Image (cartoon, each protein chain N blue to C red):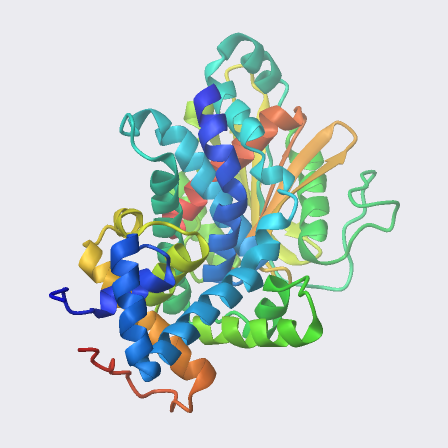
Length: 268
Length: 174
């Protein structure tokens, strides 16, 4: 028989069932004559089966709502559908919070985020509460909604007061119709927080607040509502963000995603 | 948009499995899949007509995962492997099998990222060698040599008494 010599690649192909039948027969024949190689190949095959079995349960889990493809496609299409979307957006205000430190009590407001009062005192639930409260204080203010209007100056101030290891950035939401107004430092139960404010052509306001997280330093985006105020809050690499708006979920969620995308892109 | 639903939605369970096997953290992995799906939607029109959607989407996910792992390495953060192994084998068929699976997954974690990804794409996700090469953006010969090294090293870690830091040399098979 003048067959080609068996290669390591053939042995891998044998394990993966990737050989054509004649070659497979040649490898079979080879393994019969080389029991040590046969043992090794058998170990590889067992490894493969066990690895598949160990990871199989993940693929059987129900798909989480945030990975609903139809919803993601719909959310992406929405900013381009101008008329209906803009009306909804005009009603929206977006608050992105990052607040600092971890202290013993939390601000109380008329809002309730995760249940009846007293409100949450730690983690992103507290952050969501703080974002909602700050939104209610500053968004309606028509005399001094912001303290600083220059983005660079604000970033320096916020980074210093929050003792952030990396610079915060001001998300550009002009693509969604929101103009950056400015921002300020606000007080929270967990220390200073950076507040960014945006508005649209109709004067509808949106605020962004940021603070370091002592716990829950990396979490998925979590939705919450408090009366007419809706928000999305998450934490990434030790910094928490909360986006709060008086808007429908399918309007606000893409905006929150866009904020997160820009922050992640800058942090990358 | 019907074509993207038909082509991509059935892939989501496998994308979650691949992401979690690489990152070993449920929320970080799902976050990665979320980013992957957003990019897939945004770039769907750039996809080569007639190209294989699975290979294309896996390539997006793989690149995001490698970026994430590099960032994690720079920050020096570590996933708690024991916890992660438990999470990854949430429903073992039996306790004994569950323990063995956890041990196996810990051994997989000790492989270099390039070997681990080849092993997972081929053994678990059942990509062909050619498709795995496309996902990883490397020649097929590189896929084969990484696969050989991954399997041999895993074999040593699981079944042999390999000192942790000693590089493996493949036995030649002639």
